[in-house]
Image (cartoon, rainbow, N blue to C red; front, side):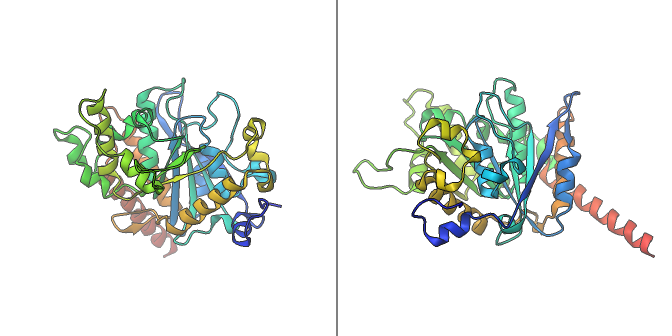
Length: 359
C-alpha cells in the first residue's frame, strides 16, 4: 500500500508507481586527471530517448535529502529503492558529480516530454572546494529545464550566505564566446543569462514554522521567498555581499517559486531509513506535500530547449560533452550559443552520413 492513512484517491493514484520503474547511472564525473568526463552508463540511458525531454535537476548542500526527493519523485522508494539514486544516512556524500535517472511507466510521464532527473553532488562538502562546487552547480543549471534548489528550514541570512554561488554564475557561464572574452570575464549580463536559465523552485525541507507577515497574516511560500529576497539595509552586517546574492537570484531567475516539505517521518530512525518505507509509514503531511510537488513539477516543467529547438536524450549528452570540454580547458567557460552550434553541427553531420550510407 503506497498510500498514507486518510489520503484522498487522487493522492493515492499520484503516488502509486507500481506500473513504472526507473534506472539511475553516473553521468558526469571528475576523472583522475582532474578533467570532467561523460560516463557511458548515463549517456546510454539518455541516448535511448528520441522524444523531447523535460530535465529536472536538484542542487543544494550535501546531506540534505536531494536524492531522496528525486527518488520519491521517480517512484524509486520502498521495494524499488535500489533502482534509483543512492542515498545514505551518514556524513558521507552519496552522489559524485552528476547522476541521471530516466523513470519509465507512469513515473516518467510529463505533460510536455519524457522525464529526466539529474542528481548533483552536494555543495560545501569537506571533500571538494569552491571551484568544484561552482562547476557542478553551473553544469546542472545549463543542462536542466527545471531547477530545484534544495535547502533545510527557513530562509535566513545563513541560507542567503550559502547561495553565494548564484552570485558567481556570470564568472562560470557565458552566453557566447565573444562575451566570455570581453572585459566582463566569464560573464555576460544577467538579462542575457536569465533568458537561458530554467524556472527556479526553492524547496524548503523539514519546514516546521508558520509563514506569517508582521501583522500575523498568513503568507504563501512565494510571498515568503520574495520578502526574503528583498534588499536589506546597508547598515546590516555583510549587507552588501548578501544583497548581491539576493539581486542575482532575482535577476537570473525571473521565473521563480517556493515550496515547503515537512520531515518525512516523526522518528529519527524512520527519517534515516525513509527511502525504504512505504508511503503509509511516512507522515501524511509529507506524502500530501510530495504529491502536490510531483503534480506541480510534472505539470509545469518545460521541455529542455535551446534557441527554440527541443532537445532529445542524445542532444543532451552532446551538449554535456561541449560544456565539460570547455570546463576542462584552462581560461575557458562554457558558452551556451557556442555549445549549441556544435551540437547542431554534430547532428547535421550524423544525418548526412546516415543519408549517404542509406544511399
